[in-house]
Amino acid sequence: MKPFSCSYLRAEAGIRPFNLQLFAGEEKTEPATPHRRREARRKGQVFHSLELNAAAVLLTCGLTVFFLLPLWQAELVAFTKETFLTPAADWEVADAYRLLLYFLLRFAYLAVPVLLAGLTAALLVSYLQVGFVFSLEPVAFRLDRLNPVAGLGRLFSRRSLVTLVRNLVKLVIVGWVAVSSIRGEYALIPRLPLVGIEGFLAFLKRLSWRLVWQSGLAALVLAVFDFLYQRWEYEQSLRMSQQEIKEELKETEGRPETRVRVRERQRQLARARMLHRVPEADVVITNPTHYAVALKYDAARMAAPEVIAKGAGLIAERIKQLAREHGVSIVENKPLAQALYRTVEVGESIPATFYRAVAEVLAYVYRQKGLI
Image 1: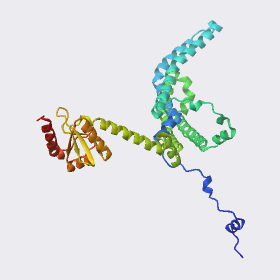
Image 2 (image 1 turned 90 degrees about the horizontal axis):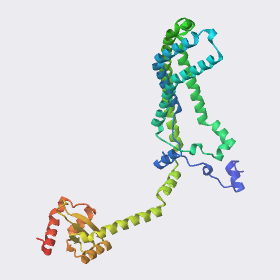
Image 3 (image 1 turned 90 degrees about the vertical axis):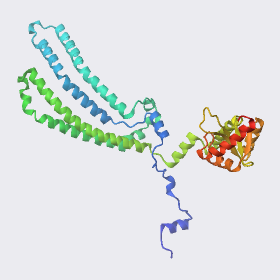
Image 4 (image 1 turned 180 degrees about the vertical axis):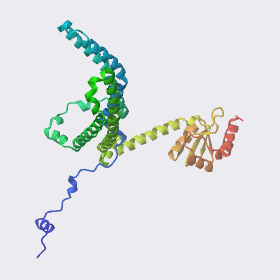
């Protein structure tokens, strides 16, 4: 009797093994290409640490309050005198409205610099993180955002869990630092009504400075870790599979057949430009049947003769034909023609090792034309 096994049952039933890897998506292990990064940025997908913004705003606003406290002191003294030194018998409803309006205007006068400082810090930190990005795609209407299943998936995703843990950690650490900063001032709080406005503002200045640098420093340290995490998560989200890279290459550069045709067309254009310059040559040095190299020398603007065209086979024949049609001298020199063809590119000047041999050829041509 055959041993009982799953493979035995599959064989008896005529079931073939099936590769479950076919259901698995290709793993994204490759870094994002520059094209992928540009597309993500165009769509407004950039990594951005809100914690870094919050820390910058906290520090900026706290420092602004600290430096504005002397101004606030003068304003608070004036407001106190305006409120409490007015006789009670002279108070009317209109006075209450006037006092309320005065209070709102003075509050706005004192608060606007703090708000502007915080807004400037937030904009500056955002710009330093991602630069200038304008895209309406993140706020565009999409039907898939109304899918409740997808919404629940986002709610219980790894990103949501990390955000929850990050906020709890920040609340605990910053709260503990703030409570520790205030703890040393508990004994002074009951006596604050007795120290007057100047004493109260001095206490407030000392306390705000301690809160700013301790709480702000703790928030800044957390923001740096959050920034590093956001960058790592952003890089992970942009990673690509090998298949995606191949598809992108096809989209950006075209299919291989198209690239071959484009390169061939480019070679044809370059060859046409090269042949167009053959009539300018002073001499064409040949192999005589395999190679042809056209040289031009202008003592006024060239340090050495320049190769303006070269070719082998049919191209060499075409160069010699053009040279005959335009009266360009053709000189047979097998070693020189082969060496120039192999070592000098079109548009380059000849190396010093060929000066003597080329000079002899040019001297021969100039004597034939009666130029020397």
